[in-house]
Length: 449
Image 1 (cartoon, helix red, strand yellow):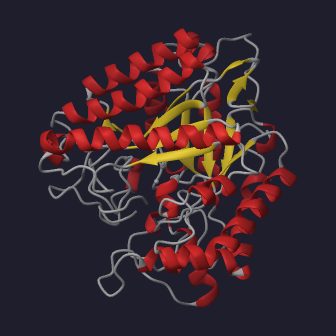
Image 2 (spheres, helix red, strand yellow; image 1 turned 45 degrees about the vertical axis):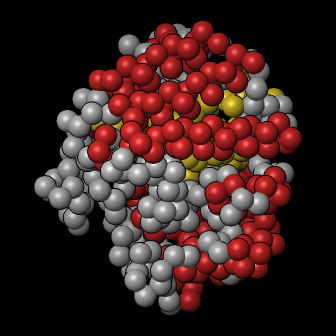
């Protein structure tokens, strides 16, 4: 994803129905299947009721769902059961992955280096969506990535130009990677490759259920990409703004031409993606169904991992202010807002599942309190997705670093992508304090429904 100074490189049925299904695993026999999530002004609704998103990020769901050496369907089922048991009703997952030369990109991908489709991963997405639907959950399907960890837009540029920049390369310090990747929007050949994958996924029929994706209510929205930015430097943002906005509008129109049933989302971090330019955030969402905000206090320099107690007050204040800015922008557009990524390290920035989570708990409570306040007042914040779910996975090596081949058997994939320390931000199945906090927030969602 991104350097620690600037992040970031990257659920369920209606919560009303989710309450009945939390302990059961599957939708009750004979119960009417939940319908599509729709937008009504600043609210999301499903089957005529408010849809309160109590979500998680689980980018690797399709990888686990693959009937292949890198998959593990039994584990995917266990993880979904765990998430449902704590009240999660929405998952944000990757429906893309572009193989190429970037040092930190995931392998395998949905498309191989030559652009051909990798069938097992598409079928893995099919299996994941079939299991998500069984639990009355919904999913946000992400169609590419601004960052390198799944290949993303930089890899599509490489396929058309033959050149690329690695994130974190000392020869190309920040913001070189972001500025270079933003050249994607004006590259017609790279956009054509993106559109080819988009058509392949959005127009797909699920091989498990036989249902066309466009007719599947378990899809909450299609998302352009994970954290698409117009650049990293002010100069690049100004230079690329027109092409960026044209790509956003054109992609939204293409999705809707293929699928008129589902919401369309952008996946933007908010003003962090535009170096504070609110005008670009507003314009980017004119043809998008809801706004998104991502919040990363450590990566954005709001908090020091070695001094969480001393720097937490600044992180708390900045988090509340960032939420306030985006709530105001959502009200101005008259659309919902989802806090679809938010992450915080364990105490002392430990990666160990045994480390305490006092300050992560404080951070989650800050987010959840803002969400619950909007639920109570009728504000635009429809919910949130924490980053991320690690579940039963554990780091395979003492240094907590992912190595090629660790994905074999589907046991090592976790919410922390392979290029990051395994255990940095994700919640494990043994994080009882975190699970209790999430469970209580899900109960509040029921109370406000």
